Image (cartoon, rainbow, N blue to C red; front, side, top):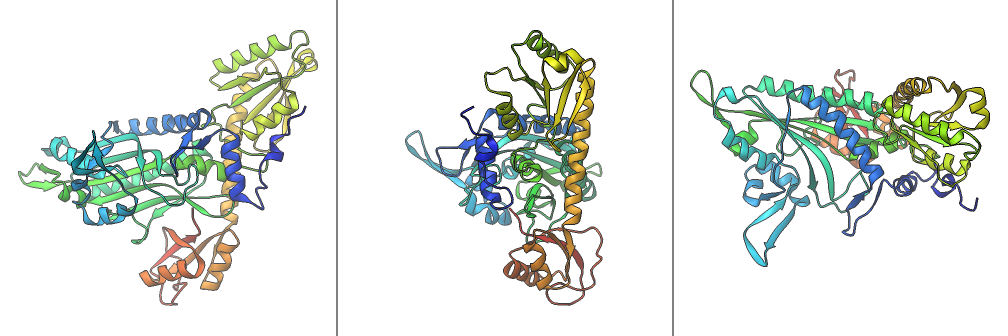
Length: 475
C-alpha cells in the first residue's frame, strides 16, 4: 500500500510532546483551525466526544434537580462593571461589540466570557421569596475569551462549556452545593474519562474573579504538567448584592441570596488526549469514545466473511456498543493503524479461518494486547472488555500520578521536582509573596490545597506552614 502508516506521521511523544499533541488533534480530525486567529472548528469526530461528555454530565445534573436554560450571548457593558473584582479579572479577555446595523451602539455589548452577570440580572427578577429557593440552572453554551496564545481544546478564543449557576438561602447551603458539584466532577472524571484528578480549594491568587472561594480539579498530563479540568465557585453574596438578588425569608425579612457557579469545557477533550495518548496516537476512554469498537474484515471477499461481520455489527449495536464496520478498500494493516491512531478502544478482526473456528480476535487499544473470543456471544465479551479497559486506563493513570507526586522542603527541591515532570507537594505559609516567589523561581503555580496540612515549614521562607499545597507547571 502506497500510504504511510499514521504512526510515522506524528511527532515523537517523548521528545516533542507539543508537536505530538498538535499532530494528533489534526490528523485524527478532531479539529481544524478556524479562519479567525485563536479559534477552532470542532470536526464531527471531536464533537462526538463532546456530545458524549455532555450526555454523561447532563444526566448527573438532572439527577440533582439542575435545570437547563439558555441566556444571551451579548451582555451589556454596564452589567460587567457592577462587580468590581469580576470586571477587573476578565477585562483583558473581553471582546466588545460597538457597532451593529451600521450604527454605533448606545452601550457597548460584551461577548460573554462567562455569564454570572446576565444570569444574576435575571435571577433578581425571578426570585422573590424563600419559596423560590434554591434555584439551580445550567446552560450549555459557547463563550469567548480573547487569548493571545492558543492551542486547540486547551486554550482558544472561543470554546464550548457548561456553566451552572445556583442561588441559596444560606451560606452553608451554597457551600455544600459548591463542594457537591466538585464531587460530581471528580466521579465523572474517574468513571467516564478514566482520569484521576486532585480536587481542592484554590489560593486567593488563583481563585475566580469575584468568588469568595474557588475549588479546582487538576489532572496530570503525560509531560507532568497540570491541566485545570473543572472549577466550582462559592460566590457568597458578591453577585447577589451587585444584581439585587433578594428574597423575602420566612421571618419576613428581605435578604440577599448566596450564589455559586461551576463549569467544565471542551478543554476536557485536551485532557483526555494528553492523559491517555501514546506513540500511536489517541487512546480514548470507552465511555466517551465516538466509536467503541471497529470490525475489520480479513479477506472480506471470501465466502461468508462480509455477512458475518455485518451480523456481528448488528448484535454489538443491539448490545449498546457504538460500533463501526470498516469495509473500505484499504488494506487490513492500514485500517489497523488508522483506528489505532483514532483511539478506538477495541478492534475486532474476523476472517475465514476465524469464521470456520467460530471465533474472532479482539485487540485492545490501551494495552495493545490481543485475545481470541467465541463469535457466539462476542457482543457480551466486547461489552465486558470495554469495562475492563476503562478500569485499566484509570489505574494506569492513577499509578503514574501517584508515582510522579513528590515532596519538597526547599525551592531547589521544588524546582527539581517540576523540571522532572512531577506534581510537588510543599508547605506554604500563606503569604502571597512566597506564592509569587515559587512562580518566579520555578515557573510553577499553586494548583490546589491538600486537605490535610502535613508540612511543617514553608518551602520559600522557612516559617511555619499554614497549608500544604500541590505546586506544578500548568497549561
